Length: 281
Ligand code: SF4
Ligand code: SF4
Image (cartoon, rainbow, N blue to C red; front, side, top):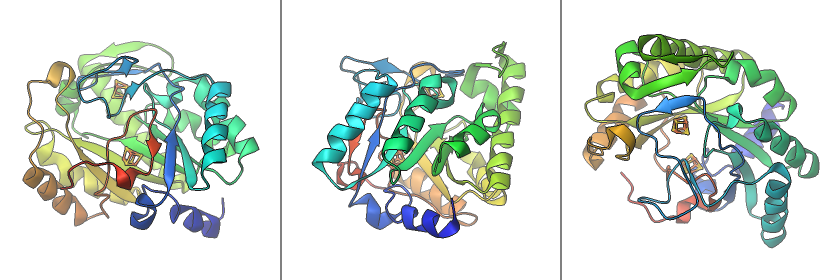
């Protein structure tokens, strides 16, 4: 993708442009149920009502790639404001072959659509050439810590590229290594990306500046610090206050531009993010 077309597309992407955030739709396609990581703050939900239903890792249903394509066709025939199609779970997009099939179908039939993806980064360096070939425009990588002890407290296990299950210290070392590798490879390949960091009081709130410095070094475009939602085995920890969130964003802003509008969307969201009623900090 050349630089000019990338910039033009950024102006239409609700999560890279403040203006677009209030103007254009993005559609999340829930085609990726499997995950390779055991986050202690995750409660994946497929179907049914749940506490805090509009949030990541939640979807009413799983679609196969053809159903996903139908969904794009349906929405794009109803509005010319759908600009971005993203895959954001409910599991890890890169751990599901359906993600690649879906991107391929949409890229072929909707060549102007902005293709987007979120990932925990574990498989990113392995998949980057495939994603480039499919015309990916932007990627969000979640980095919650660069510290091994903190990673031990955040993640129960990880499945390696070779499908070996690692736990505890070994798992944390692998996650840290693969996530840094993901940042390096995005920088080298010059792919536009932002980093999501979940701010978890008492766990990683003192590490925000270190993360910000590191991702700025690896040429991330934005830092998206989002508030922890008390879930999973970390559900006894309170969400950060608005002041704590603002402080973390201000600290990070010394190094990298902030995205302060995130709505922590569900895996099947279809809306103009700026229209969702959520408190801003
Ligand atoms: Fe849940 Fe995402 Fe973590 Fe997988 S990577 S466990 S889907 S939060
Ligand atoms: Fe944009 Fe945040 Fe929603 Fe992702 S979760 S689509 S970054 S508003």
